[in-house]
Image (cartoon, each protein chain N blue to C red):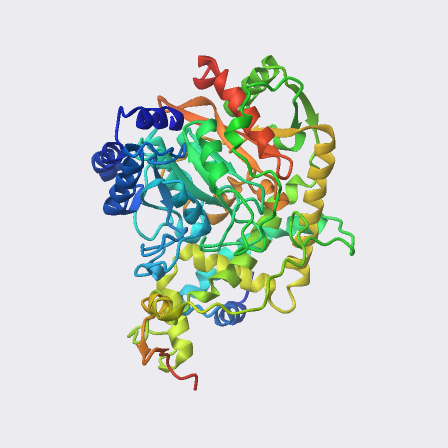
Length: 95
Length: 490
C-alpha cells in the first residue's frame, strides 16, 4: 500500500493538486493496480532486450530550419492563450 | 454503402447537399437519445457538400469518398473547430490546424458532420468517463457503446454517419466496433499519421476508421494512410494504395492461427460458440485454421498498464493552464493558497482533469520516478519486446491471428465504473496488437442473447506488420459470404 507521503510526492511531481481527503482514494486505487503489476515479476528478460520504435524506425530527421507562420499564425495560437499581454503569454510568478 | 452512394451521386440520383441534409436530419432525430456528437458542423458540412455538387455539375470526376458524410472523434484536430478530447480542460480550445488525416480527407471532398464523444483523453472502454455526456449503444440504449471511441462507433451504428474516425491505443476502435456491431480497423503502428491527434500514448496510438462494412473501412483507410513528415514515427511502407481494390473475396489457403492462451475455460461459452462458428465459416471459404502459441500473452495487460500511463503522464503534462485550455488562477478552494505559478498548475489540473485521467497520470508518474523506473517501466519495455517476438514467431506459421475482440458483449452503464481494474481487464484481447504494433480489425461475427436482446459479438483478426491488405481481404471475404447463421445467434 502506497503511503500518504508517496501519494503527495507523486501528486506534486505530476502537478496535480490533491487535498487531504482525496489521498486515501489514490492510495487504494494506485495500490490495486500496482499489485496487478506483480504478474510482471515472473517474466524472464534478457538484459540486452530493448524496443524503441515498434517497427524498427530509427533516426528520422529533417532539415533544421524554422518556419515562420506569420502574423495570422501567431494570432491563431494566441487565440487560445488564457491570459496574454502585448503578444506574450502571461503567467503568475514562480517565486 | 460508400460505393452505392457514390454511384447515386455520379448518376445525379441524389445531390451531396441532399445527402448531407438527410444525415443531419437523422442526427436531429436520434441525438436526443444516442448523444454521439459533441459538436455538429452543419454549415461546414453543407459547404463541403455544395462544393462536391459544383464539381458534379461541371462533369468533373470525384473521389469515392467525395460527398460521403462522416464523423471525427474529438481528439482529432480540425482547424477552427473546438477539440475537447472529451475533457473540460479543453472546453474552450479551438484547434489552430487540421490533423494530417483531416487534410488528406478534405482533399477527397468528404463531408464532415461533426466531432464525436469519447472517454476523456481516450482513457476508458465505455465512453462513460467523458466529461460531457453519456453516449448510448444504438443496439441497446441501456448499454455502453464501448470506448474510448464510443461516439464515433455509435454514430455509424445509429445511421448518423456513413463512416467515422476513431483512435486506438489499447482497443479503443476495435472494442466499440464489436459492442456496436460494426467494423473498426486499427492500422499498423506508423501507417497513419498521428499529427493533429491529441496524444495519449505515443508509442501505441493509431487513428483508424469505422464503417458498417469492411469495404467501406478499406476505402476510408486508403485515404488516411501514408508517411508524413510531420510525424516521424510514420513509415514509408511502400504500399499505400486503394486497399479496396484488393478485396477479391478469395481466401483459399490463408492460414489462420488461434492463440491457445486466449481460449481459457473462463471464456464465456456463448462467446466461444460464436467464435467457433466463425472459424468454421473461414474454413468453408478455404482457409486453414491451426492452434498457435503467444507465450507472453499473460503479461500484455500489466505491460500495457505500465507503459501507457507512463507515456500519458508525459503527454498530458502540457495541459497546465498556460498556453491553452482551462486556466484556474484564483481558485478559492486552491491547494496551496500561495498565488504563485505552481498553484495554476495544481488547481487547473485538479479541476480540469477527470478522475480516471488523474489516476493514470499518477500511476505513470510513479512508474517513471526515480527508484521505480527500472522495476516497472524498463521491465515492461523489455517484456514488450518479448511480446513482439511472440508475433514474429507466430507469423512464420500463419498469415493471420483470430480471436474474439472482447470476452463479453456490451455491458450496462455503471457496471464497471466502481472498480478501475475491472474495466482494464476487458482489454485483454485488444492491447496486444498495440504493444506489438500489428494491424487489427474487428468485424461482426454473430450475437449472444442477454435479457432478450441479441448483442453483437466482434471477431478480431490481427495481421503482419503493414499487411492490412490480407487483413482486409479476410474480413471482407468473411462478411461477403456470411450466412444468416453468422449474423444471428445459435
